Length: 219
Image (cartoon, rainbow, N blue to C red; front, side, top):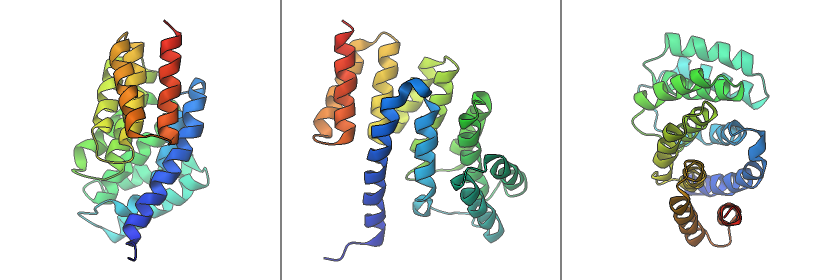
């Protein structure tokens, strides 16, 4: 049976996200926003799967240019275009998604309060988006964590974990890690054991096993 193009793209995403995890989770000491920025970069290539209500061709063209600029590392130019986009096309689907990418840029620059604001604006304006909504929760959770709001970070990671997407398992691992930082070791271990059970023989499962071993070694 011939596979649908959309299903193939989703499989590509899962494969790519596993590669992201293998690198990102082994470099936690280099700041939580690293993995968020990489995930965002991956998601850019798959945003075609996002429903586009209130479509505006001009706004969509601007957003396309933004993605191109982010892809080559020109974040300042991308931010300028995004500011124009959300100010002039804020009621379009492209304008709403512009807040997501502004959140990513602010996070990567260490502007965590601004990142939280932009991710929140995105989440309040888009009712559904297969990849971007859970990714925005992970991004906002990362920004909150950097500011010391562990409870807030936990809640965002939990929302990502509850999404029926490939990003759910990332949310679970982040949720478990923060639970351990909050002193809820038993909860953290239970979450990780569940991920290991659900992801046998995968990079995600291996990373959950690694974190579980680290938590047990701290006893």
